[in-house]
Image (cartoon, rainbow, N blue to C red; front, side, top):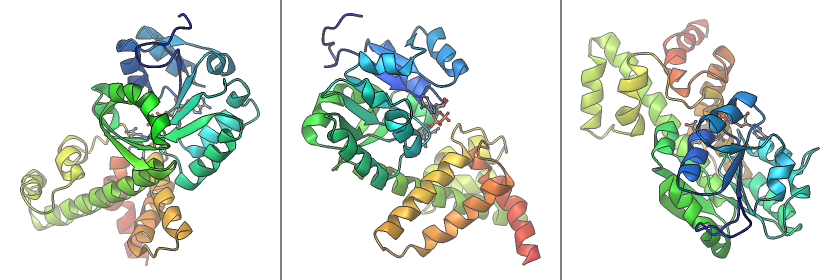
Length: 306
Ligand code: NAD
């Protein structure tokens, strides 16, 4: 890899976090000809990227040093802050004017603070969280919500266009993360209602497949009725690829945002209480569609005990 600026407007992209989402996103960049080097704390995650022909680094600092763009696709904003400013801080290696794109679903207030801290060191931070899950990460059709100064966003837009096909400028830094948390709140509400409705309907004698068809042709339709009930919930395989722990984190982020802004959000509070109970009963690693299993068993037990 030479030091010339690539067609994508950057010399080299460091991609941190090669998990369920990061791996297919980094692969798309690599396949499109972007000079990308991947890094993950997990050896098997690094191996998976290397097996698909991607370059991987064993040393995060060394990757950051030679990259003008750093993408983070980590579990949450705390992990992003630790990677950038923790005990082995990536910022110590970043070139002046480097751009960090946090594509994780991080907390918006923390993102604003981090952007200020990095700005003081001459490093730009923009937030560009995604929606669409593993399937849309694989085919590059993610929705991407981008917060940050327009001139910085413009510099990395060609990279974002490799990973997503709906790219929304949401405003100042942090606004993408606020939008993402609120989107997932609405998404989790739709999933929870759909699972509950199916369980009530089934007990009354309705066929869940017929119910799903009716919902999808009626006003109850939402992303979960369209994309999650038949493949993951009705067969009870719970394999969508997005964990319960990460969804609960997003719900907590949305609820914290409402509190921070002093906006009453009673439905959000009820929903987060239910998902946190599910987290205690199941595990953070369980699939988020397993909220259905929680509703079917544990929630019923809780109701009897009350
Ligand atoms: P994941 O747990 O599969 O992957 C996270 C990866 O980050 C892991 O491989 C972990 O080893 C790595 N990691 C943690 N700290 C690191 C560090 N300091 N340096 C390098 N690597 C590090 O999670 P995921 O499902 O890929 O989700 C990633 C982010 O995307 C989360 O914020 C999640 O909320 C969001 N998201 C997920 C989905 C989905 O469908 N899975 C969809 C949209 C958004």
